[in-house]
Structure formats: C-alpha cells, structure tokens
Image (cartoon, rainbow over all chains, first blue to last red; front, side, top):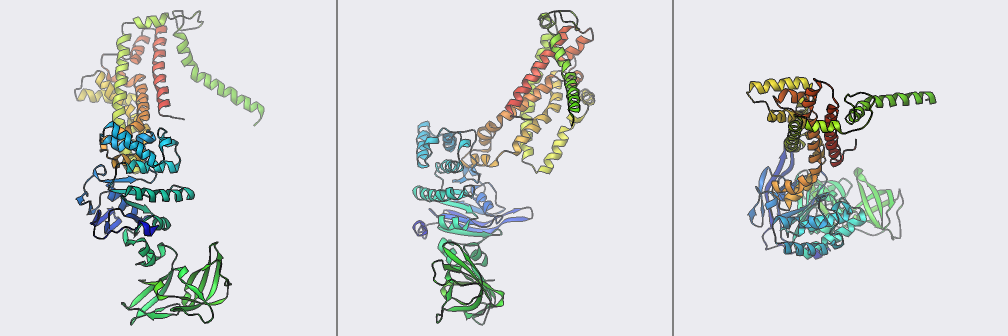
Length: 358
Length: 258
C-alpha cells in the first residue's frame, strides 16, 4: 500500500512551504522554528506524542493560529497573514465541528453557498459529494442523529467539496472504535487516490501514520525530529526518539572510540564517526537466537528473562551483560521455544542496525 | 421517621405552600368579584372590574409604557448582554468571573438604593427623566441575567463549529450570522424575555426614574393610595400574566430544567 501511494515528488516545486515557523504561548514554546516542505499529492502524517506541538503546527497551516515567527507559503503564495477563510486549505477538525442546526446536505453545501455559487451548481456538487461519501440516504437527516463514522464522512465531504489544495485532518480517526477506524483508513486512502489532492494529517498513532501516509514528519517537543518517506522513517530512524516512537525497537548503549563502537552488552564493530556515547537501534524481529554453529555479524550472549506468547509471534526478553536487555520477536511456529533461564546467543546483521547519537 | 412525624411535616409543608400561594390566588379571584370591595364573601363572578380597568384614564398609557419599556429592555439587554457574554466566554475564566461579579453588582444592591442612586445620577448629568431613563435603569439590573444565561451557553459552545465555518470560507461576521447566532438564538431570545419580565414587574426603580409618566406597577401604586378597588386586582392579574407568560416562554426556549 505504501509503495502504491508513494508519489514521485522530485522535480516538482513544494506545494506547502514552511520557513522558520514557530509558535510561543507566553513562556511556553509549542513549536520550535522549523522548516517543512510538502509536495503535491503527498499524504503526509505529522506524528508525535500528545503535547509535541503537532496540532498547533496544523492550526498554523490552516490559519487558526498565527505563527510567532516564520512564513507559510501555499502554491507559491505567502498566506502567513491571511485568515483561514482565504486560504486554499480545508480542515477536518477533531470532533468534526459539524453545524448542529443544519442537515447533512446543508453542512456539505455550506462552503459553496458562501461562495455564492449558482443554485444548480451547488445542488449538483452536493449530490455528487453525497454519493461519493455514501451519504445520499442520510442527506436530509440532522447531523446530530448520525453515528461517529457518518459524522466523519460528512466532515470530509464538507471539506473536500471545496477542492482544497491541501486538506488538513486533525486526529481524524481518534474518536472512532477500532473496527470503524480500519474502515475509515481505507476510506481516506480511497479518497486521497480519487481526489488526487494533498492530505496532511496529525496523529499520535504510529500504525496509522505508517499505513496511511507516504511521508511522515515525526515531531517531539516542538521539533521535527525526522521527515521522510514512511519506509525510511521506519528502517532508518535518525534519532533515538524516532526509533522508539515508531515501531518496537531495542536501544543498546554503546561508545564510539577510534572508529569502533563497543556495546555495553559486549560486542564491538567498526563504525566511523565522532567519539562519544551512541545508541544502537535494532528491531526485535531483526534479532534472532543463534543455534549451535550459527553466526551473525553482531553477536551477544545473554539469559532469557521472559517469554510471552502474543498469538502471531513470541516476545522473548533476553538479559545481556552491562544491564542491557534485548527483545526478540520469534515466529510463533518456531520449533524450539526458549525457556526462562536458558543461556542463549543473539545475533543480527550490521545492515539491520542503526547507530544514533545517545 | 415515625408515621406521626411524617404527617406533621406534610401538614407544615402544606400550610407553607398555602401561605405562599394564597395571596396570588386571592389577587386573581378578587379581580373577578362582582362586589365593590376586595373582601369575602365573593357573591358572584363578573368582568366588571376588568371593564373598569380598561376605561381607567391612566390604564392605556401605562400599559403602553410597560410594553415599550419591556420590549426595549429585552432588545437592548439581549443584544448587549449577548455580546458581553461572548466576550467573557472568550476570556480566561479568572478574569471573566471578576468582571461578571462587577456586572452583577446592581442586582445585589437594594433596589431602593439603586433607584436613589440612579435618580441622583440622572439629575446631576442633567438627563431628562422619562422612558429612556427607565429603560437605561432596567437594562442595568436586567442585563446581568442575560449575560449569565448566555454565558453559560457560550462556555459550552464548541469552538470548532465556528472554526469550521471560517475554514469553509466565512468571514468572522458571516460565521457569527450563519452559525453562532442560529445555534444560540433560543437562549438569547429566552434571556431577553427574562429581562422583559423583570422590567415589566419592576416598581421601585421605575418609580424613581420615570419622572411624570406611569407604568402598570406605578399605576397600581397610585391607585391603592386612594382605595383598594378590585380594578387593582385586575391590573395585578394582568402584570402576573405578562411576566409569567414571558418567563414560561423563556424557560421553554432556553431549555432550562431547574
């Protein structure tokens, strides 16, 4: 899915350009000065824990919060000082912000009515939007009578009918239950493909970010820690934070000296770079338990501390030297299941690990 | 609790309720008496005092004044109070509650003190007493109720609804007219009707600030100085109908449930 939605972005100029954008509230800095480029037809996730400034950043793009410093450019036009009603962006808010005194049809047609479009055009486009979002049956219901998923579809239709250059979504799936969330993810993916627009959404759920977005900006404490393709972010995290926030990761303490990294847990390997403390990131499923005579590029010995059966895999925690512990994910169908207290040798390939500054 | 004690409390409560309500019931009853005095026994029912009321020389001007003042107070305090409530709802809670306490001060003051204060104020700034001064004075004590009621609605107002409107292309004014106002309209109208009810039954402040004219309450006061005829009861019943009527409509519109 990711490979499918991955768009070729090179060569085209950025659609949305943030330069030196920051936001302070009194003494609190919600967003540190940052740059961000978003390209046409991208589906971008701004991912981070709560309080990291991701929603503030989205509101700055939408025009609901004025940045303390910096400029915002959309499609070559500086919109920094322009209100939300004049920006080529539309937003699906958390909680949706539907108009409770209007029907589904009136909600969806609101933007077009403000644009004073001819009656017939409004009717046609609303009917089309209703059909695309499978809301035709509910067109004349009050929005307060709808389920969460239906309300979400109304909010999406109401925003997309204006054909925004950038659609902004604030935690679009947070209010839905698990089953509905998966259905809505498919719906968002479908809409993004059919609509061919640029979507930017904010989420704290790394799974959601990975499954929907082709590009991810990981935020922490008001900063963008890493921005890139979804696969790159997962496979090659740039910082400790990104490594631990996206997917499960083992973080092993180590020290680099004279072109060699030595881990507290034992092994050492060559790695050029400045001297100092480093962390080695390796995903649990990249680590294997080595049998007699088997070898790997990085090896360490330890004692099994915990074995947990998780249905599709077994999570095995191994205590190693220096107080380090390593989590290994084993295939549940694996023949030999280790027992607590077993002495084991763990190993992984150098290409599966990432070295980040500690 | 024993059965006897229960019964005792029930009797006390019943007596209390009778004492609270009987003056109102009597007022209405005596307005329909066929006798010339407001006392028992009531021999028969008639509309003679209601007929008497409508031919009283002062009745129609006073009735008109009451309605004009009530209507203007409703409109002015409805509009200004709503704007104030919206502003307060957008402020930090701590600041808002201080300002609200200040605005509510005229309601806490004894009406007599407020009436004297207003009279001295109007005289000192050389404002001619009349309906406008009464309206101003009523707004002073009716407006806090509007602010409190509308503010209670505004703090629960989902700001994302307004943000959505802005996002979809509405200017701040368009967002207010097409989204905020339609949603809070019942509460605003209800609050304005409460202000009208407060205005229509006010006597003390009207008495000090009206100068020469009359409203229904000041007319009643003037009439009982010469004698308690059942006409007074008829006017009293009319005031009762006006204020209870607008309050009931107000409570229904604001969905106030206790």
